[in-house]
Image (cartoon, rainbow, N blue to C red; front, side, top):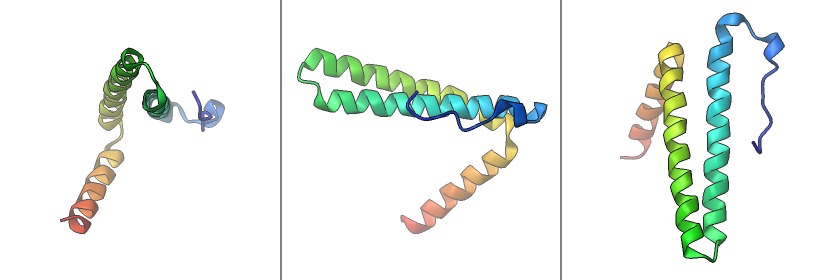
Length: 93
């Protein structure tokens, strides 16, 4: 993982642990997506480029899996995502 794990697990409350694990998983998947897409952009071999983009796509699915579980565990996150969507909809019509 290119980013650092942003959490000191010892400082977390028990009820926060699973949410933070999910967020770390999401960070790892975003790192992987960025890495594979950047490598694909410079790959000279077309087969390698296609494989890298396919792997990046799989990582997007993994991100979605983590996000789905997080949204089940963190209702505030659900509310804030909706607020963010509404703000974008207002600004980008």
